[in-house]
Length: 547
Figure 1: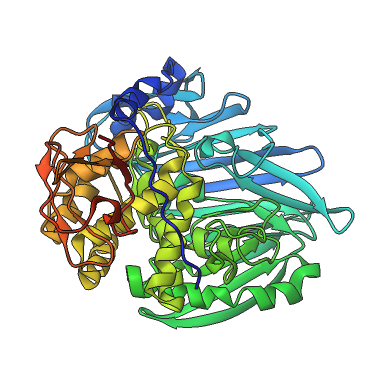
Figure 2: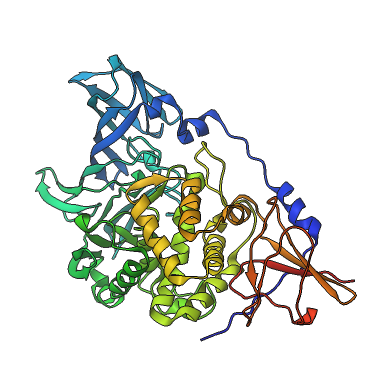
């Protein structure tokens, strides 16, 4: 076990305040609002219930064509609604009650006018037929779109990845996380010789007698739009099962034929992942849809029940340990991290991507919990503390609302260390575990917000942690514990952007707790100033002021 040295950074009191003023101000456009608004009456007027997405993929021409059936329920009386499709793709027609219906396009938003007003509670449907050359991702999964590539010489290998930019980059849908579709049927046609793997369970394969075969997949759980995926290659398929908290879970693996032996060795981490995460978070959320790993030409993505895998059958993150502790080389990062999103991201989903910390902070922390489950609590702490070297403190973790904009990528490692700090404050591991399980029970298969998550943790912990969340999520800086000595008296206080910040902390190798506020307070201790150290589990900076 390697020890991590907590480096206490010495910063002036002016830096923590002025740093916030350096945040880049971005200008947002009408296109951003059309894409990101959760309050537009053209979106809130209907609840999406079901999609039947049917797409033919032509890899030679990098061309797609198909349709999507929208089944919805009116939540108010309305005549016009909005769905989304990137404007580089053509809308061939929209059919409502067997007739073409008029529509208007504005940036990547599409507005359709129904012949007459739909009344609240009415269940209805329409179908969008579309075609075109989708955007090809330049660096999937960090930018969105299709991936068309080859393997083993000249064999096609196709995938999609669209988190952030949105699924409307390749198929028409109500493209916001706040309204997850309740279930879906996904029909993907690909050239003969290829197997398409999408979400849920395979219902059948049909030879279309035109050089293409259609693969029909059924999803019975609510699902994010960005999770719906195309994965096509001449896959080798093998399967297994896992006896978990909800019974028998089917495990299916789709890999390139040349990687069969590697996959059978590497994918043993799946059962280790499931055992650890069912302990920490409760039952895997999607037993009815099964669990799949699908080899992809990009690094990976948390596509629900069809997790994309591209870690090249290496331990760690492409063979390296992000924590620098050695613990990250004992397991496959993509299997653990992306599958962790089945609980945080897919089961629990943020309404607005500004709150994506709910997905990424908890999932990043799940890596530490995996390490703890298999190698012990100190190993888990080593791992998450080791991630601190990756934190930039460049922007707030929470992004601007209503414009489809995420916050800082610090939502990963900074968010994980915030959660580790909160666990340390709660100081009751069984209660902490019950909170993680309870989050999945309370918000499972639902969409939620930062405020709802914080309120739940406050209630279940019995502590008001709101100001601590605010400091780590809404500001760039982390709290600074300032200490000074005047004569024989030692004083201490918090330097924070949050008025009334009052996080308790524990001294290292001691049962002594301190309760600093933002006002100078006498530290009643016999410990010399030079020996005062805070337990490493708190993600803070410490500044000892010189006389």
